[in-house]
Image (cartoon, rainbow, N blue to C red; front, side):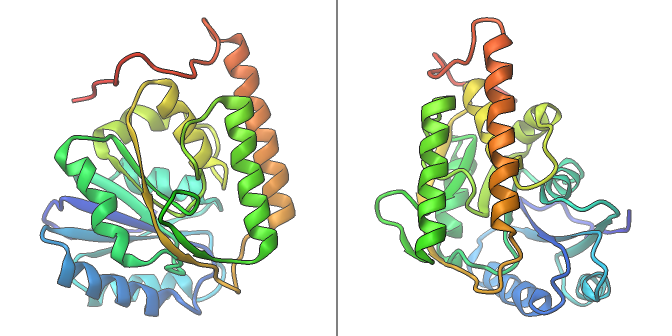
Length: 259
């Protein structure tokens, strides 16, 4: 694993998982870097996490880490967004860890609202939601239908209370991440859902932020494969809940304390 670090511990560390993203990586990182330096009132690091790219992504990420203050680069040899996030978050020394998709589909104007409840201590996890009241979304009818059907399935089968499991715009208190990540098995796209389901089960507070989100027409997501993987993951979590002592807890009585 190649890890180029900045020395000062930041308050916020934003991971950007990438796989074969040489087309947009530099433009997106520079745009995000400029935004956080202008708008975030505390030290913020950007962590580019390359998971097994075979194009120029790795070289671009390494170069950005040397050119831009507060940017680090990591490389892992295995594919998978979940694995990339696990590696970045577990190695971070920030108070809050986050991630966003490299295409910056979610408006950066929502970043402050995403982070604020974690820094204030009023929430443990904060997630962007394309399905919450007040959100503004532009995407294909197919993607909209799949997203709504998937989240309805989660509510029906796993009794989730959050609206949007898979928006690529999330943040979590670092201590909470270190508590939850060992229990998360998935290393790919289902990582987000599994993390949130386990967090809800354990009584952690999840805050949803309505976002402005514009679909990337060049998205690398293989929808049929992702849907199948997600369905398998949902069934696995359901089986685990059935065999767990007391079954799946749809309503946690008290917030979980992690210090």
